[in-house]
Structures are given as structure tokens and as C-alpha cells.
Length: 124
Image (tube, rainbow, N blue to C red; front, side, top):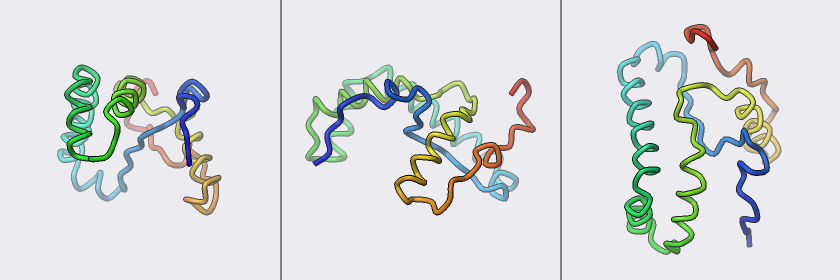
């Protein structure tokens, strides 16, 4: 049995609980769709943060069997730390890549600098 002992962002401030990735060809072929997806993802995160009770109820209804108090705790701890600024947390990406490698989800540890293209982002 696994038990949460500490919020991941308390242990590692750059811990990524969610990553959104897209292939170069998808980005090139569907920039408008990708912008809409990112905008709605941001709206969803902000809405969850603003409406914890409703979010908890929706999760409990959709994913039956979860204790509402546990869901509410997850929403109040996880959602507020989501990066909603649109910046790329390369340090956090390195932590996520390392974790995925350690868990065996990816065969080799990848260089986060090689995973992101910051060329179109001014000031980054």
C-alpha cells in the first residue's frame, strides 16, 4: 500500500505533476488547435482552484470510490502549484525526466534542454 507522506512540491519545489507535450509536426500543422488546448487547460486549472468544492464533487462523481476528503486535499494541494504562467520549468522537467527514468518509464535519462524549444519565446 502506498501512502502520501509529504506533498511532492514540499520535497522538490520543481516537481512536475503534469506535463503536456506535442510533436513538432503537430505544432506546425495545428497551431490554432494547440493554442485552444493550452488556453482551456489554463482555464480548467484556474477554475479548479477557484471552485474546490465543485471540483471535488465532479471528481468523486466521475471517479467513484474516492473519499471526498482525499480528493479535496489533492485539489487544494496540487492544483494551486500548477504552473499557469505559460513558462517552461526546465528544472522541473529535469526532475520529471529523472523520475520517469528511475521508474523505468523511459529507457535512458534525457537532457531536458533537448526536449524543449524556447526559440520562439522572448525573454526565456
